[in-house]
Amino acid sequence: MKKVIISLIIITLLSCSKKASDENTIKVWHVQNVGEQVLIKERAGERFKKENPGYDVEIVALKDNAYKTQIQIALGANTPPDVFFTWTGGGMIDYIKAGKIIDLTPYIAKYDLSNRLVPASLLQASYEGKIYALPVDSTTIAMVFYNKKLFEENGWTVPTTLRELESLCDKILAKGIKPFALANKTKWPASIYYMYLVQRIGGNKVFYDAANRVNGGSFENPAFIEAGKKLVEWVDKGYFNDGFNGLDNDSGQSTILFYTGKSAMVIAGSFLVGTIASENPEFLNQVDAFLFPAIEGGKGDPRELVGTIGENFYCISSTSKHPDQAFELMTKFIDDQSVEELTKIAKLPPVKGASIDSPIFNKIVAAIEEAPDVQLFYDQYLPRELAEVHKDTLQAMMGKTITPEEACKQLEAKALELLGPSSK
Image (tube, rainbow, N blue to C red):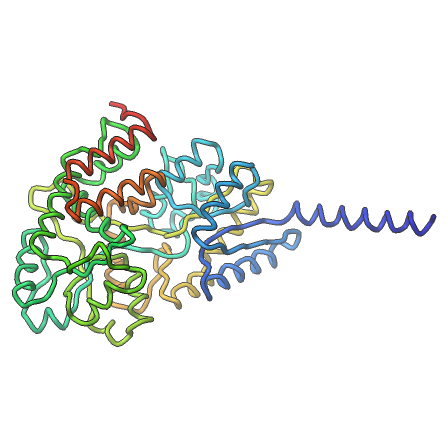
């Protein structure tokens, strides 16, 4: 009998110990799931534990598609991890309105992070004057990447206006080379071209108002239609390689055109630099970049960028029992050690002074410092179902199966269905 009682006591003590341990475990979900990226997060967790011996850390790296499903299930059941990553924009705003994440503004002030982080990164993580996510990991800015060797051999100069860009494209075509390499099977690559045209024509407010259903915003605004017409015009002129809607960007079918000199330029996120560095490091010496040029008579500020300042943004769930410790752990993801480790693998965190020894990255840093605003990629900003309609209609429009007007009408109809009418 004594043995049974002793065994029960031991089991109870172990159970209580485990429960206490679980209660003091900060759980993190993220999608930086490749090689060194995983280890950087784990080492940050170890630094936190060393400074907070009463707490444990459980950091889980998930694949993108698995994460999107699992986080929705967890949030729906009110069992999310303490810390989880999100893209900003519409998805983050949905979390805010549903009360799923907490306001991080006081923590940003407590740790004086507004003086550590690039201002545009905190702006991207803000909603109605409050900050709800911490920008971490890498900065991705879309630019026009070009083959320096081709430009030098032919005396081509970097354009500063859309008219100059189109004149350059005509000269490139005359040499039997395609101006732009595009593989749009996955639909998002062409969206980068479209976003810059919309921004330069109408400014970032046009998209913000349409996506957030405010100020009478609509996806049938003339800026969206005119941007679509310009892309179709470029298709008709032959500015893109043949069969672009059937080529797969993820398998390198656009970069091979760029590497072989069959296309002189490509508009893409700065992640392209890392891709080239790993696939074709010798070619990287031939690559340079410039910002998408201004449009004559356009309302958009040519300093404004398309991209993401932080790539992954980290939130604290409203169900977390230890928000103070959770935020302290998050700061380890952008401390000096993490910044050094990230830059070594060509990841540029949104921290002031962070740099990578590369002329292209120097341009990216300079552009970010001068940018009054950075437009998050549409397919990340919009709710998932609406983002799919955007990509589907854009691909169809560039394939000339629907007109720009029809594409915008379909997108606006879906926005009305999902988000309701725009307020005046």
